[in-house]
Length: 159
Image (cartoon, rainbow, N blue to C red; front, side, top):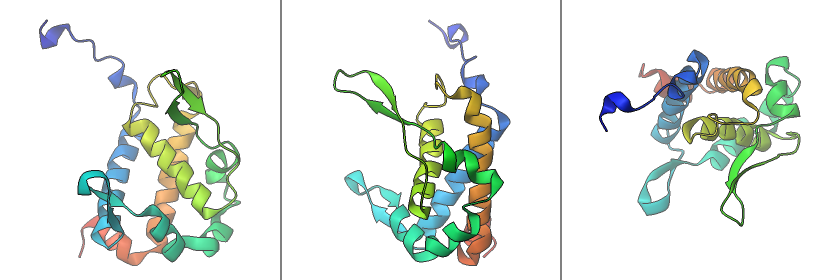
């Protein structure tokens, strides 16, 4: 089989907004580790310490400011499902309750990212919501960057 025989058409179904989200999250995660919110993960690979960042830099004030924002309601009211493997080894989608805190909101944002990065937005039963989830996540990242000048500096590379 040659590479010409491989059908890549399903990969082309990712929208421009999904591709933008991929790039933005990639840069956000670098910037968070760059400014000191990294931690060793499995096999000492650097991971973002989301909990520490969320609690130290965002917290209840950020939640109070943005919880009623229309652009975030798809993440808050009907957060993305989580792709999991059940006890039989089958791929299923785990439902999550309404978001009620900044920690929940960042978790929902991360699930959108994880579903996109790890194939959950390809064959997703909520595919009709993907564009709204991508837009809400991009909006949320933008608001986080506006709130944190140090993070924004690293994100933009304009030291």
